[in-house]
Length: 231
Image (cartoon, rainbow, N blue to C red; front, side, top):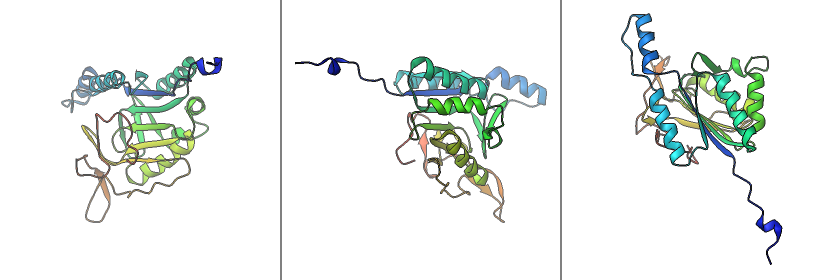
């Protein structure tokens, strides 16, 4: 005999979201180069990120994607998407540009200062935190060098504590290969070498970030859909 309980639908799994910077377009690059009097350094990465987001949807590795022009837009959308669907968030991947201790979306930046309780981002971060599927949920900053150097380590620890979930990021400049993939949970200390992905002079002083290579530590591909179990 089949009970009504056994016939009830299983709860839907938590959401996997992908958000990318929609402002790094070829036109924006060209206009910026004209203002600066220099040739554009790249054709703009937003079209590639848009294609990657579509790949995640096709592969069923993302339930919803967004091209965002700012952090407030990204955070507002993530919380609203979870609320409207009635499902918590298992993971948020964010694709854009970054550096030691920060990641930008359009003209806005997420850094240690933006995690403070009196920052304008605070209520938006609170809403996202409330929609996360507990401490095992994931926020993955797929940008260059955000977890590199001492500033990146402090940022990683602060971000995990602020969101109350696992966070991941990179210590190298990333592209097709994405090296220095590091993750930690709330309350954990960053245990990777602060010099990882950092180009130093003879005195050990940091000069800049290194490019990802296949032989660098904890390297994944830009086609990697989910964070490896042990990055």
